[in-house]
Length: 165
Image (cartoon, rainbow, N blue to C red; front, side):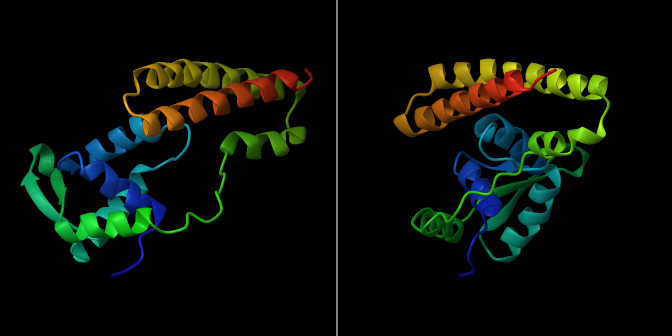
């Protein structure tokens, strides 16, 4: 059995809930993991055929506009459980915002202010969504992840508020 990467594991986890198309997986990942793990459309569409080729997924029903459903197999469930039982290794933070802020000295003061204000608005919106998810979480593990997302968004907003104009 090949070792799963985090994106493949995220998709297998989502497919435990039932068959989904690539588009449905992208949407489910954004809703479920928003704030602590990103999954892009290109990653989903790259991973799905590889997982099917490894026998971890099977093709499901063909949907409208040639969309393809995928369902997790017994081998996929075993691979996912094996992945869950491995050491997670270091977290890798990839923040386009932080990267932009690092290089924001190349911007005009007005451009920097726009960057900070735009980011702040996005993080306030994400904070509101995260609070709602934390309030609605029905198991302690989802609640812990949702609480982390709330704290993360608060921390980013605090950092943005500390940037001098």
